[in-house]
Image: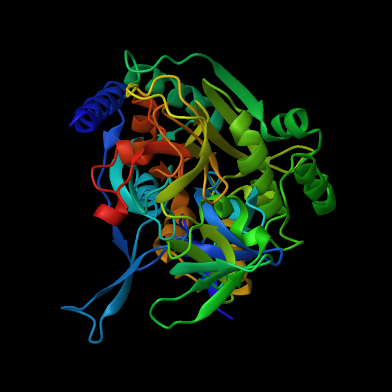
Length: 189
Length: 317
């Protein structure tokens, strides 16, 4: 069992807390004038996304979480699982709804995502920062209005709904920033 | 360069303060054959390869200049001060760097009450025009604990300390032994009390005898040490004692420290026999305090981290 000493604590380190894989957000070393030193850490539970605070006696060890971020290509959704593939090893991974979470609405087949694996199984999926998605439904475009002012909702091929300029029409390919969920511009095929 | 100017200015004021007060600046070795036994302090070690010892000898980098300064006091130096770099392994964070500048001074004939006044005067002069000293408060460890947490730090059981932490939504830490009562008190201190100290200068005194370090014990019903800590705007700045002068008791504390080190899986530290000899020959009645200069500068600059004050912190050194 791999362990980390509190001396190795830093932002991003993956450790096991109460049986769940967690990522250290912030590590603070505290010590009274004389006496025992502690590491006071803010930790994100990678399963629930919840942020908790924990204290360790300095010098203690804690179990390492076998968590790694890998680039995987999204293949398809079979109705229950989202299937991903490692483009080097061709190894496939199936992610459930909990792991995919909000990323689901941005997942387009063949896009490469960052997938967090815990003990080899998908724990979380981060879509690419930018995705190119086709408009499947929106109000008719207003020709000549290129100001972008106002805007209207548009449904994309993945089901996501984003605000787009008035001139956008059904069938157009758009570039979307998945971090903000905002329209960036038109994209070329 | 602002932090260097601030440092130069503050140190010039410190030296002027002690010159006016007739306290002599001294210089003692950084390297020593003996180290600090306190289990909470880890000394860096290095080796000397001669001429002299055939196979080299171990040397500790000092964690404070306390022992040699006490030897000077015992030799009749009178009141003395020193500004020097000290080294503490395993300490790094916003308010810690493994090497830092310490201002340590001893006043012959003072007790810790006189010395707290001295600390306040020094801070008033050195911080003038830099950061206002909003208030000065004197609290005992007992009263501060009782008022902040509702529990008596001298009588509460470890279970009660743990319940208190839980009521502040602090989960019991990993690795803290159930019988390490001082460890639990330290946890309450760092997690509950220190963050609520607020602005101004706060002196906390009369620490439990079990946390006496190198302070003498005070007579009375409650077993307390003549030890104080000074906090400025919530930052722990200085630790002072009415110094223990009893050589036999000092040796006993060194031995207890080393026994605790062994139970904690730490290497015992070579005890400073020179210091014990000096105490046996007679240390004058005195009080001494060590003040973290970088932390003082950090507060003076209104900074949140030592990185703003230290030119090259460890990962950049």
